[in-house]
Length: 83
Image (tube, rainbow, N blue to C red; front, side, top):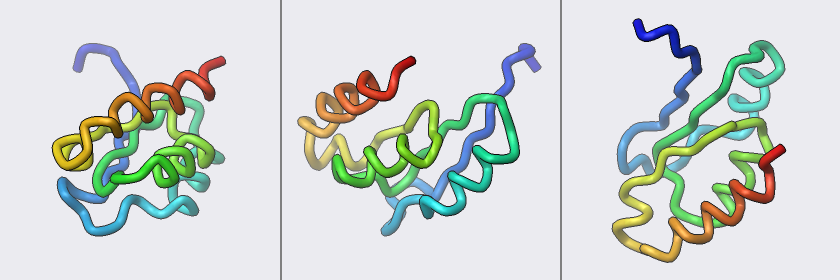
């Protein structure tokens, strides 16, 4: 409604597993607008895989509540993918 465009793919708040990498890759291959991914991201490996699959941004919540260092690590990963 504000003219902003992006796709938000979510596994659900506190999801047991994050959105599958194959889903993110498939969406990335078919759209050119930014992709945000959230739900179930609890490790640096999952965050790295999510960005590698084509996410432009991630949404963190429960994972950071359980491990505050995850936010710092996620920012470093994000920065490594910045263009």
